[in-house]
Length: 198
Image (cartoon, rainbow, N blue to C red; front, top):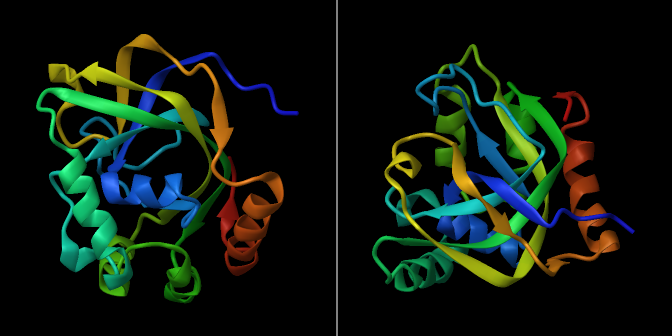
């Protein structure tokens, strides 16, 4: 049995619709490219365990597959309390791959919410830097935590130091061990030739 932490003070910003997909077990990966932190030229997994911080401002229906349009609409409806962010999921990175080839990106297309065009743009933006594909084992908090949005949470950065220890209390994996490994193994097989390191 995996020993889970009691608290966390770090969160990764991600589109709310992607967090919804991760939280429902429809998706187990995120795609990231460099240059998304003003102090860092490349995306780094600075900590292998973190909360998921939902963002809304850059979500766009044209950038996600049609099958997830209702999920997008639901996240926008859920974002109805100004000045608060609700943290409902904590996760741990099980695998990290660096992808530079179109073939590898095409191979994982069925396993994420983003359109082919958007995923391709992420790959080809700053082409000398690989695209990071991270596999996340996601856990749902039995008691989601609503925090006031502090000024330093804002901006185009990936990582948010929350400035407090957020209690995680009881958490449940959104996928059981077998379900997660089945989904993760398919992606590992596709990306087997990519440089992998957690």
